[in-house]
Figure (cartoon, rainbow, N blue to C red):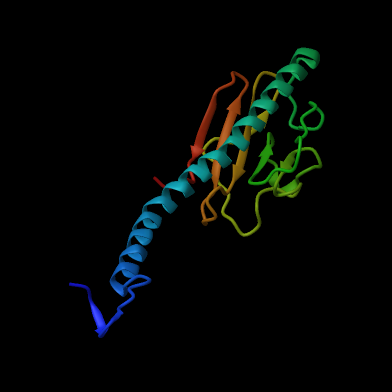
Length: 168
């Protein structure tokens, strides 16, 4: 038997019920709650690729300069290192003289005046360059919180994540 409101007029059931709409919203909310933190982690790890790639470039430039001059240099511009584009998340240095930063010592997102203002800047192993070895660092903020991410590379090509800013 067909549902009829009046004799001879069938009831039309177009659209969704409130319960059906609430279930769809609940499912979308649950999927978002799972997907967004995972996406943010992937995004932060991809930002760390900037540090790794540019530290690799510093390593190559320092090794080439050492071959020619038999010393490593604190001045990144003097060894031929320049960013291909604009650094988006990291600054790069081979010198620990952040209070008196010269034009070639600090290159990257934070300009030539050292690490970001207002942030506490400590690295576990200080950057340096001398006649026999060097250590370059990259410092940045990949997940927009108060802590900084830092990477280092040395004259042996050892790449290390000193402070991991990505929350596990």
